Amino acid sequence: MPLKAAIVPVTPFQQNCTLLWDEASKRGAVVDPGGDLARIVAGIDETGMVPEKILLTHGHLAHAGGAAELKEKLAGIPIEGPHKADKFLLDELAAQGLGMGMAGLRNVTPDRWLAEGDTVTVAGNMFSVLHCPGHSPGSVVFINAAQRFALVGDVLFQGSIGRTDFPYGDHDALIEAIKTKLLPLGDDMAFICGHGPMSTFGEERQSNPFVAG
Ligand SMILES: [Zn+2]
Ligand SMILES: [Zn+2]
Image (tube, rainbow, N blue to C red):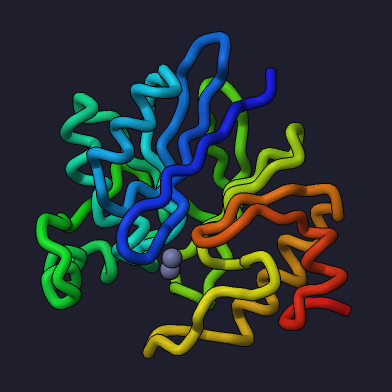
């Protein structure tokens, strides 16, 4: 049975925290719980899902800032991802949050770092892991080939791509990752991104000014 998804916008950055679950078993995952834990918990209650893990696409605070607190609230369920190259970001979430007037964010250490070729499961549904650096060094994308569905974090957006104007950003690496790893997976692959509406790889291949052509 296909996984269900619900988006809970969190933080002043309107980050798409995503709840993914299997309707039969109710088991699922919380992807990128950046903050606003009360909203995330309300979403969990409304859907009736039972989170068995937390997945992180990358180390930015709007995506990972609430992960440690949510793990604690959910009896210590494991946190998987991102790639270890984002450890330096996860190690300074609390300080960064304070610098932006966001109190209560915590540093987080995942239970499992992810790398290219790894797989993760959500309620028994397999996602392959692609390492797509550029927006951040440790950004990962989760691909469910069977259900033609991806979670791409801030790698790719509808009509745009992730920022690379950070000291550690790499525009060329980001474009290469999108063009060589994501778009070849097929036009019909739908994706949820870190901010804004869903799209498909086909739509972006045709009309996204950064990667079309
Ligand atoms: Zn980001
Ligand atoms: Zn973001």
